Length: 183
Image 1 (spheres, helix red, strand yellow):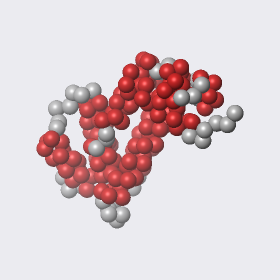
Image 2: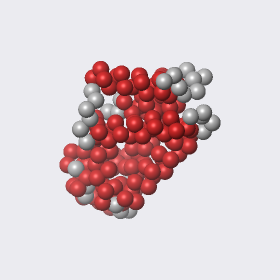
Image 3: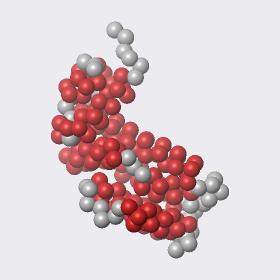
Image 4: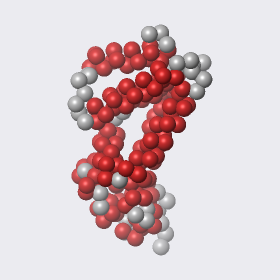
């Protein structure tokens, strides 16, 4: 039997569909296999457990966030801009797509059941803080900006954010100014 070259990606896409359309509580290997068009054995070949599938989903979200930030870095600030990486993180946080928030919400719910699933997220945040603060004159400002972005992200994730429209745009500008050290 020949396996499809992209079966793993199809399984991950199917799992994201299940958690965004039905919720994290409905993430069942049978449902994912059916949605991906693979047998349960085929799914288990790539992901030997539900935990392994969830870990891969978390890794995928983090990889996409990193890729989004790299793309934003290329368009947000010139290469010689010392605050460019921080501005890219801010810009990325402000433009996260609604469907990414839905996947993140579902994975956050899964992490509430098993906090170990959030270990890679914690490590990713710590690595980002070290990277952004390295050699900076004001490392606490970097931390404030990162925590502000996390707070905005969480408020928007929970759909309780008091910030929208023009105020949201002004907030991003203010955060860029803080990143530059002009405030």
